[in-house]
Amino acid sequence: MNQIFDLSRWWKLVTLHWVQNRKRYLLAIPAIAGLLLAWYIFLFVIDRYSPIDPFSQYTSYYCGLYFAGCLYASMIFSELGNQPQGIGYLSLPASHFEKLLCALLFSVVLFFTVFTIVFYLIDIPMVQFSNRLIEQEHRVYQDTGIPIGPVTVYNVFTGEGGPPTDRIYHALLLAYFAIQSAFILGSVYFTRYSFIKTTVAVLFIVFGYLLFEMKILNSTLPAGWNIELFMGWRQDYGRGNVYYVNLPSWAATIVGFVFRFCLPFIFWLITYFRLKEKEV
Image (tube, rainbow, N blue to C red; front, side, top):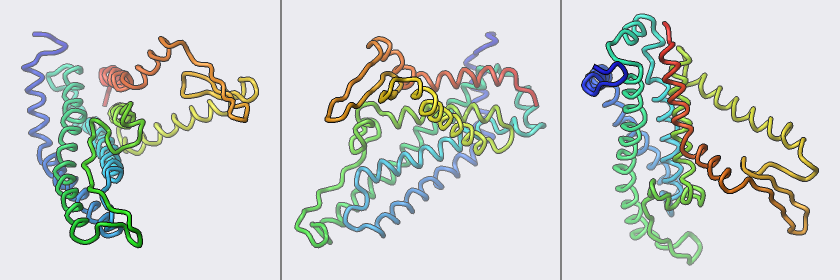
């Protein structure tokens, strides 16, 4: 039997995780749906003319996804925070790689799938109700003759209805998986209050980098030059004259690919090695 990964052994681990946590997971689904429904009702109360436009759906989806996804990810290795449970978890007859894959299956794949399905089960009927409300009560905006167009459903995968960066690069969706992977790592590093501690750590790293860039890196550049999106430098001479110095296209492609697609895998790899050396 393979000591790193065996499909039969891994499936038994997945089954055990589901049996131990199914009540919590099944209760979380109506809780998420109820909170989303309550939020949409609140939007109807404060705005009866365009309460659920695509941008409102966009912000509702990603705010819920980021908060719930990162909160859940920070608890995926919660057994390690309790000594008896941690000893039992580490002594399970499964490899660390299989335990990591089990955690990723539930926290990354299944959570994202279930959350998206729940979102659309609430979102689509509410959008339809919003369109009926517009047709029956007010076809134009208040005190204007501007007609109110039908509300469309926000598409998570094409980004239609969101900002241009989301439609072109899917920036917020890809950033979610990167940030969530940091919370998965935090659930192994921090035995208690992992969500709060990981949030503080992530904010500290982000603000630390911004401070380093603004106060140190930019101070080493010639006057008027600034770093532009990790991959170039920009100087504005005024009167519309803007000059750029960019990395070679191959280097910019590599840097962009790493930041867009590789960060989750880097955090998962660190999580794997941290899990291997974990003691309780």
